[in-house]
Length: 302
Image (cartoon, rainbow, N blue to C red; front, side, top):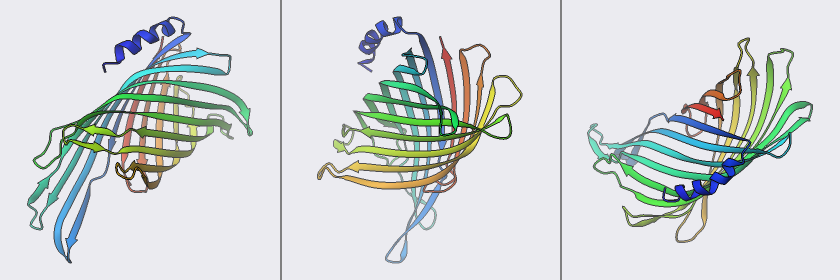
């Protein structure tokens, strides 16, 4: 946070020359299904592990959009992201009594500054409205902490840094029904977090990264109501996650693959300015099967 004011002062001259300024806020809630795992020691009951996670996320961005021509637009990005994860982790004995409670609430507060672009390709591959969008965000002065610690939970406190890069290709195809459109989309995202020092436990936390690929084929429906739009369909997702061992400096990778179902509702006012978006996603398989994600997005162009 100590860098926010200097960054704002650097961005003010850019804001004065901007063609348009957009304020965007996304609110997200993730709920993973609870799990019960029984562990055995030499064939005898050892403990039953109960685990459940709930995550709340708020991300607010100021977007400065500067058109280069009719098809290409550059974007300056400045914002803040807050993440709160309630991690419930309990261990039970065979008689059902509590053995250990490691539950805690984890916080991650992240200032963001970055650059993006939006390039409208137009007609291609038999479709139209093809476009490529992307951004690269620097995540600086990330604050990590933990609160609401149960008796056996471990604390954490520290600061780190990282970056996030995303690239998306999306198009549109007509169908025999005039109000229905087929929307293919490809996306790749890379996140990386540097190694950081946990002052609460006096230890180094390993660097992490995640490479995510998505391929979607959605139906887009334009109902006979001005401003409204609905999108629904499947998404294939592959995640490659890794941690770098602080001793060997080698990355240890773990792959996950899943199918997701999405329903998305959008509203745009007749006059340009305000947009509303609501999404619901569910994991149909994979390690987090039945995980639900709800997201509300609000944006306003000045």
